[in-house]
Length: 312
Image 1 (cartoon, rainbow, N blue to C red):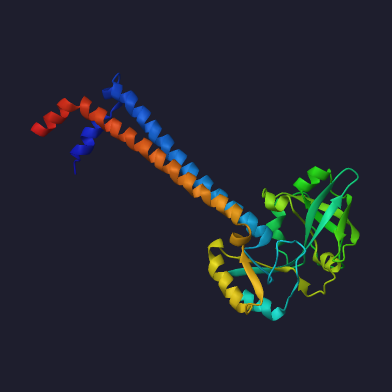
Image 2 (cartoon, rainbow, N blue to C red; image 1 turned 120 degrees about the vertical axis):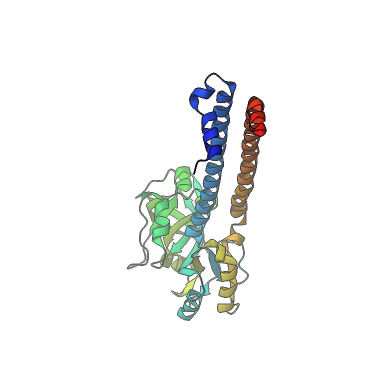
């Protein structure tokens, strides 16, 4: 079937028909502006959402989506221990969305070199740690698989700490710890690797070590740890899963999410949504104005043609 509308429009937009006319230039500029606007909107949407997801994954890779720790836990990094039980971990594993559970223990100390010193919190991890999630952050050396064999003195420090203290891999470092009675104790560690997450809350504070070394420093038993880190399938499951985990633990422990412990980071990430919508709104207005302008120019230029068609 012959399409009269398509035939007329094709004749109007034919290259030879617009040669030398102002409409040709205006149309090209308008089409270019609209195309650029669409590209900018897609880039803003993809980069904004992608960056949000990546930052959330980085936080979850280091600290898990949910943390189970002792009740009344203070901001001090010398944490109170909880006693891990196989039954408790099984109950938590049955919660919908839970994919991984790992134990950790922390101890605050001071790394001392001949020229400078820096505070650090050594986070002890074991053989249940999800090494595949953290490995991409290691930029130098490697991360030992702690928990295999005897306790080791290997440690993985952040690039921030390594730069401040001018420490390289394979070096022996001296770390001071303060016991409950106020007396200091010294431990020597070997730097096995250097990591960088890009999140200052982690890079400026933490180092990774063997959980058994931290338990020995804290004078804890093998089943005593600072807490459990729980990884979920999706970060959107955190509110419901945290409530179910609190019920499964019978309210004996404090159950927090990364939205609670790292609210400043996630709130900053959430602000990307505002930027994305502002960019989309501005570019939509620009594209709309361009389209209206082109239509007005076409109508004014084709007034005689439009009148002829209406007469026919």
